[in-house]
Image (cartoon, rainbow, N blue to C red; front, side, top):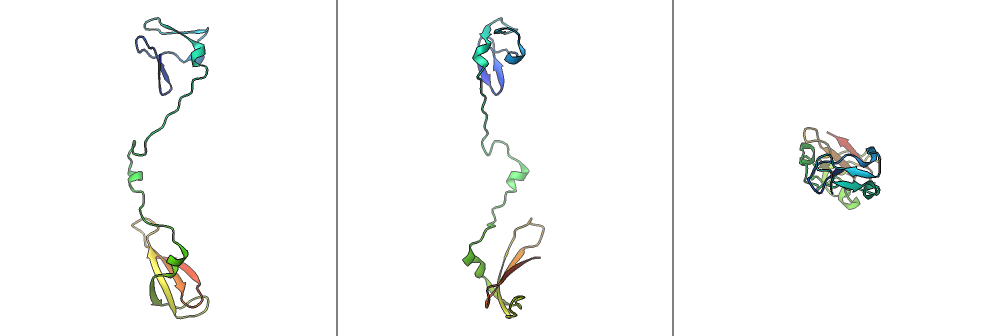
Length: 125
């Protein structure tokens, strides 16, 4: 007898055996060759299956983003300087940088940091 997935096959002829829980009596008999197996052999049967990450390629998996979406605090304060008024303190200078956080057909997200008070906010273009 051999087990493939959750199916049980006869060791003699390879025929698919009936589900042991659906068969009456203490023996499981192959309908093809008549080989018999004790149902007790299958009482603790545990089937474990697994797949490799690349086993089922899909369009969705191939679109997995390689864009960095998390930033460290010091990375938020870096960036180009722009003349933009801070909504918190009124300072006329801010650092900014952009990231493409949404799908490619949508605008980028712009992160602003005030050079004076450190106030941060973001906008979506």
